[in-house]
Length: 559
Ligand code: GLN
Image 1: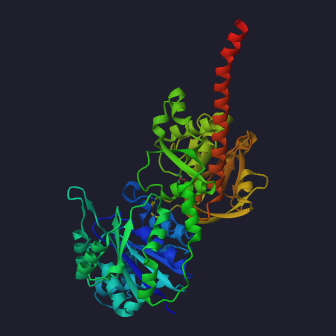
Image 2: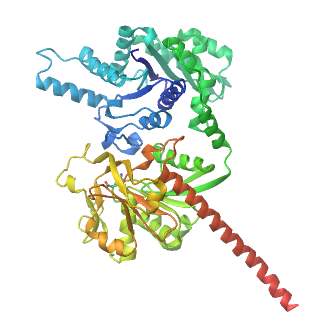
């Protein structure tokens, strides 16, 4: 059987959760025994999001093959078993890059190169590539219908539907049905306009996923169906949720998968979502709370650390805990002393995540010192491992000027320096150490205890590395290098054996964590944080009880 396609487009406004919708459809189809793949087209002109500011774009998600991709691919991997690579995310920039290279080679044999058919052909080729060996390929188009930039992608969908026929292709449109407080009414007009826009491009949607804050009543569904030329059962309530892991279950309750299979003429087994049901049960019935402080360059803005936040949630769910995350702006800690301590003292665990540039580094070092000295569980990811090494070099080994050449190129003690393979490379796009690399873990280490394996593979995205010239003094003073590349070139993990839980990794484990398969490093960190929080609170309590009893003993003696 050749693959069938589900096209997911969005209307009215952005941020309606198209990526999550696509991922949830993938999840449901997998639960019916189908093999799926998912891809996203981003209509902007950057070749990839690698050089874009996280303010602009949110997190850059890294795949095993080292592609820097849109964060929706993170949702795809967390919700399904699809194996994603650079083939699963295309921007307009990358499509044009291919076409221009072909044109320069003379591949177009003297023809005029045009949007139709050359650009649309390139888009269709990319779509077909991900559809090999799967039952269903889910193709999401970024942006909103009506955007000038997304037109070639919409046109490619129209052509695919024309070529393959309706029973092989399905169009799902994610739209908004707002509740207008002044009128106390749900409004269908934005959806009508959005579908009209889609129709003007030649695409009749089959299923409408209507984002709302409440269930759509039957008559409202009927009205949308009538105006938008879809069946009433194909008007789906995509209600706001408190946990994203509810989305597949809500879609299931609305029968989205059953309908998709019907439209695509696919016979499949009954859905089995019991693991997700059990997961959502745990989301809403935690046994206790755990509080993690993330010390970053800036206070978090939506989406910039998507996978990290999710991975922490997975770690907490693994222990049946509710995660409380607070962002601590590193620069705000730089005064040090009591002021910094006050900001750091109420966390069960502290984490320094990945990051670039010098801003806030001194504050991160203060937080790491606090975690090390006060025995608060610490987890350093990429930049967080590098800063942990700098802190150790400065405050334990006594190399006061220790630094990374990223933050101070003139430092006499470059504990962290530019990756040797990148010396002389000045271009910024795609020039980091990217993607999956094998790491060998030393026996009798915390890392080994956590992974239970001596060889792992994790994803990277960095330009600087630990400088092995400092291995001697740092390890002599108590730092343990617990993971390295198999050839010993790169240091991948460090830890402190005389601390309950202090670990840093050069890679980004958050990219591989899934709700049903929490990453061991996150599970271990959140577990350690919870335990340490418990004993800290118990200590405090017994101190208070003692304080309470002492005066009464004194008074007894006096009497
Ligand atoms: N800025 C550091 C480097 O390039 C860390 C990168 C990161 O945390 N992803 O090596």
